[in-house]
Length: 628
Image 1 (spheres, rainbow, N blue to C red):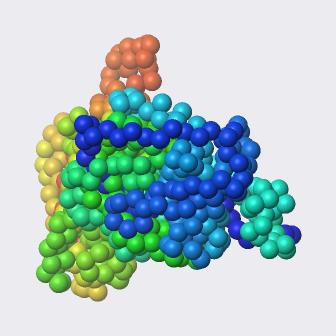
Image 2: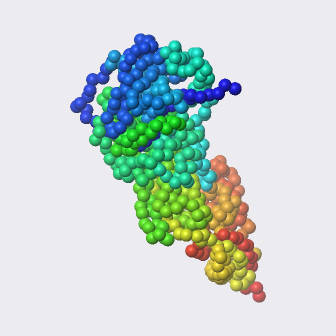
Image 3: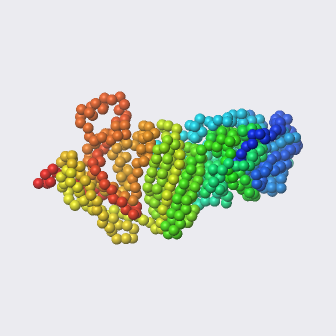
């Protein structure tokens, strides 16, 4: 097999983004364009990109030739050799995507591709003609909200949600490119025995600020299925960057990008402005996420330095503010609008670490998007809990969070977890609560805000239900039963706790079950007993199901009967008389009627200072004569 050495990759760099204010009165005059048909090998020109700070610098460019259909069907690629002190011996830098290149002051295209592991700065340019098509498609108005929020995952409440998006970009096999097929000027740059080159499909790097291993795993599982590769660097953005408007005006060659998260943890892709006229611009020279009409935040980056990595040299920078929106994400570039900044979801997380007596509040803003928002909010929670002290070891986490939807509906939960990575389980629950809001099948909805409070303590605060007893087995309707629970905390003596269960006064004589169960079994029993309650028929039902919550630090004591009832349009009813059952069976909309398996007659709970597990079934007999 012939080895693949140089690999052609997409150059959209990483970093964090923030954009600039725009002075409409200072509209510059841009040079004319030079079409591909007039480009010849040996032509020399220059390009613009930011290597440090916010001011674009010039680099030299010499045309090596044109590869027909090199970008896609009907879209050629211009091969050029670049020269600049910062490019020598490291090749083309990630973050240069979109850097405009000029011949005789006429714009010919944008740097978009480069050979990985190549010390020679050979770049593939996307011609300006197809990029102008993206520019023309870029409306000043955002796309319809349903489209702008991104693709649907169709997540039902109660179903587990994977960190990996259900909708991924299909990866294509690398295309072999023979050196002999390159233009003559390009062939001379390779030694005679150079093997075939591998033309690699785009891999979009996403720059992520320094974070814990658990948080890094969330980013990797989120972005890699979408063809985007996270790169973790010691950089970021100020927490207030998401609320700031950059005062640095954008120009051709300026560094811009797309932030997926800003604040105490930052993640985003960075590239370069290719062409700007008025309030519209086109950049990157290749897609960011290839989703067509979008509404991504857009910002300007300040570049600190370039990192000469053997794997992939890249620009290192940070966000300095937001300046507009990306409204088009196409094969040959992204189209943006200056001035209109889309909504970003505010996330506030307070973490109290009891052993070290630290109390810190973390703040983030995340992109309002069906795929990204739930996963970025999850990453924020994981990072807030693992950044301040330690990320692994036996811990107990008590988490209370509040989700507010864009319609003002609120979902609140109290969770506990105890393990060597205690934060992951509640974070997955948060993800599973957020995803159905964005990807429900009934209405276009999103999240207005998320707040959380976390208390971390050392050790495993867990306990097990060892046994349970009732003080008597025969009771009259309306009387109460005392239930004794014997619970053993980890490495401690067994404790006895009592609870009172009230028997309804209308119960007929007969035998009934008293079920003592933990949160997991309580939820499972509810799903089996009344499946009709878990079939949403409107967005309000989705919210109702997301609010349904059984706490892990609680035991549930239920009085149940094997007799069934029905749920009608999400409401539960006891066993109905035969005449009413016959009437319901004749209704046309019978799918709203679902029988229940058993009835929940009464319930009480007992709270504990630890996570408790275990289940037991007891029996009592209801007798109006009290057993006499």
